[in-house]
Image (tube, rainbow, N blue to C red; front, side, top):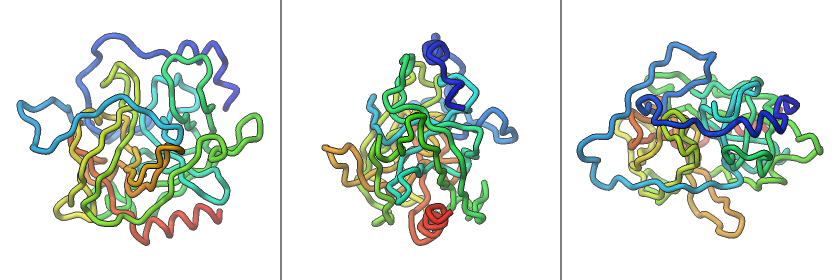
Length: 272
């Protein structure tokens, strides 16, 4: 699939111009996945107290998921590299429905003739069998995928570095979330980052994060703590996912708690 990304196609994959349709919540799925409706994310007259503002910022270990035969500007979810023995594992949300038809582009740069860290084909995917789109099954809204070596035989983690999969310390954490909104919602087509305190989502084993700018496309975005300024990586304690496919609008985001369940899936993915 890497052969699809010719210089001409990369050059053509520039941001769309104009305002586009009304921004949508974090319910975006690949085009082949239907049946999940998006909610219009109209900015309220007054945001909830404590809501932060996002700013443009990307990291080498975080990137977009895109259908492998489509232009990069059609990216629909976010993923991140996690440290693993095989150095080939990425983390995203289960509701993104990852599969072999997609590719991962770390530190995606819109319109670039060459992506700074390449384009990586997905070869296998691991989703917890307990995941469901509603109810307590949303507590399992995370997934791992293995990517193939690039055309030079390099392993992903050796190129981008990786975040450390970490048990969520508590419901209250000072965390940074980086993700890529869809172009239709955010025409700048750049990664957004925000730091804020997390809190408990009532009724679920999940966290809540308040910050503006997290439109459709940011599902799967990693929640990082203990960021290392030298490596630009940290400990990943969550992903945008869970209840309401990760949040009802662009300023409220959710994440499942990372406990023994996600490590069971991680260990299975590493072994297979």
